[in-house]
Image 1 (spheres, rainbow, N blue to C red):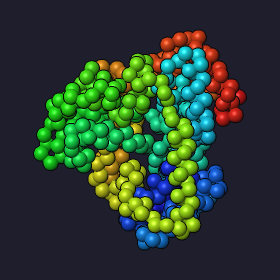
Image 2: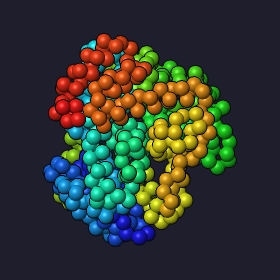
Image 3: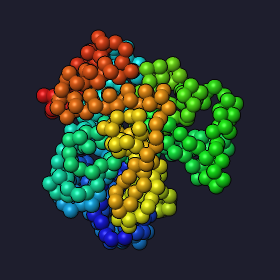
Length: 426
C-alpha cells in the first residue's frame, strides 16, 4: 500500500479518537503513512497523541504521527480527512432536548430528527462546510469521511455546496445485524444482511445465512413472535407492520416517527451515564498515555467502524464490500429522489465508493424515508443560509412536530439559546 496522508479532525474525542487509533494502528498496510491528529482542545489532543505514539511503537505499524490544533497546518496534500466534531456536544444537546419538551413536542432523542436534529444540523453543518472550504484550497482531491451527526444532512450539505468528495459512516447496520443474530441464537459473523434507507432509519431488506444462503426472515419472524413484549418495542412494532427489520435501535428510528413515544417513552439520552463513562475512559487513557498499564485490546480489537477499511480499499484498489455508506442517492434507491442522501451498501476500490443499486423500497418504507428527505433539504438550506423561514418549515414538515405554535416558540428559543454557535443567523 502506498503511503498516504490521513488527517483526523476531532481526534481529541474520548470515544472517536481512540477508536480511530485502534483501526489505524492495527492496519499494517499503513506503514510509512502520515497520521495527523487535529483537535482544538490542547490537553485532550496531547493525551491522544501520546497514546497514539505509544500504540504505534508497541504495534510496530510504522506510522508517522503528528498533531496540531490548526487544521490548516494539517490539511495540505491530505489524501483522506476523517471528521467527528461537535461544539459542547452533550451540553447543547441537552438544551435541544429540554426546550421542545417545554412546548409539548414529544421527541424521543433529539439528536438527528425532530427539533433537536434541526438544532444539531444548524450548528454542525457550517462548521463542516468551513472545513470543506479549507480542503478545497489545501487538498481538493481528498476524500472526506464524516462521522458527525446529523449524518444525512451533513453529507447533503457537502454534496450540494462544495466540490469535496464525501461519505458518511455509521455502524447502525451492524447494530441491527447483531440484534437479529441475538434473536436467532447465531453469531453475527455468520449472518449476511443487505440494508437500505436513510441514516438511522435503515431497513434490513435481506437476511441470510452467510454459509448456506438460507433466508433467515422466516426464523426471525418466529423468534420475534415468541419474544417478551419488553424487548425492542418500537423496532418490533415497525417490523410487524412494515415487514422488514429496522435499524439501528428504538431510540434512533424513533427520532423520525410521530408515534414513537408510545413505544419508547420520553426518557431521552442518559447524559449522566455518558458523562460518567467519559470520565472513566479518560482516566484510563491518561494512564495509558503516561506509559502505565497494558494497552490490551487497543492493539488487537478493531473499533467496528470501516473508515480505514475504505482507505485501504481505495489506496490498494481492492474490491471491498462495505455494508453501509451515506451518499447521494443518484439512483441507488429507485423510488427516492436522486438528491436524497441514502444509506446503502457499496463497493470500494481505486475508482472510489460506488453505491449498490438496491431497487425500490416497499411503498410504506419509501414514504417514511422520503418524508425525511424533505426535512433534509430544508434543514440544509436553513443551516447554510441562516434562513429562519427554512428552519421553521423544516420543523413544520417534520412528523415529530404536531403544533405550529409550539414549532414557532421552540425555534425562537433554540435560536436564542444557541446564538453564539449560529453566526449565520446573526
